[in-house]
Image (tube, rainbow, N blue to C red; front, side, top):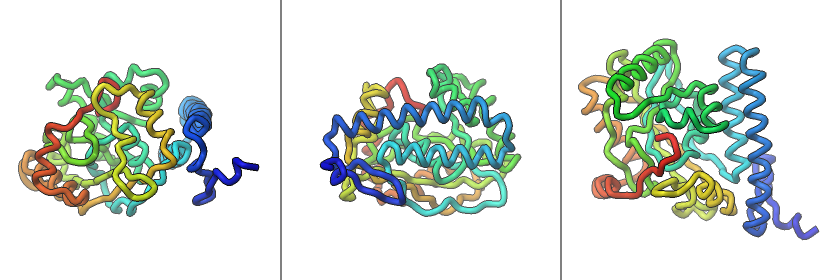
Length: 282
C-alpha cells in the first residue's frame, strides 16, 4: 500500500514523517483527542484510587505518549538524583515544554491563574498538581511561595519558568528572582535546565514557539504539520542556594545559557524577542 512507505518507526512507535501535511495533521489531531480522553479518565476516575508514586508514574508516562502522538522525539540526559526536594528553573519556548519536562521528571509547575479556567487543560493541570499564580499581586506570590515550600519540604520538585514568558528559543531572557525565594528559605537545590527544539535534520525549528498573538490551535497546527521534531532537554549541575535570590537568578540564568550554548549578546537580545500570547502558562 502507498501509505506504508510513508510511515517510519522509532522505539516501537509509528511516525508519520512522509505523509502529506493535511493527512498527517488529521491523524495526529485524532490521536491527540483520544489521548486527552484517556487523560481525563485517568485524572477523574483512576487517580483517586492510586498512591502518589503510582500516580506520578502515570503522569510521566502520559506526557511521554503525548509527545509521541505529536511526532516529538525527546532527547537528553536524565535529571539529577537528589535526596530532597528541588526547584527546577528552565527557559520557556512552548506549551510543549511542560510535557517535555514531565517526561523526564515529575514536577509541580507554577502557572498563571488564567490557565485554571481553560476547558479540559486547566482541569488536567489542576489534577496534576499545578500551582496557579495570579500575576501582579504580591500577596498571591507569597501564597504560592508558601505552597512551593510545602511541596519541596515534602521532597517534591517544583518547576518555574523564570523568564516569565515564552520566546522563540533562540535566546534567553533575564531570569526573574521572585519565585526562587522558597528554595533560598529551605536551602533546597536549584536545578537549571535548558530545552530546545530542532527539525529531524538537527536544525533550529520555530514550529513549537508559542509567541505573539498566536492561538493555541495555530500553535498545534504548526507542530502537527511538521514531519517530526527533536526536543532536547538537558540539566545542569544543581546550584546550592547560598546568597540573595537575585544573585541566584543570575547564576541560574548563566547556567541555562551555557547549556544552550548562548553568548552574552544572544542572552541580552532575547529581551526584545517575541513574547507569550494570551494563552499558555508562563
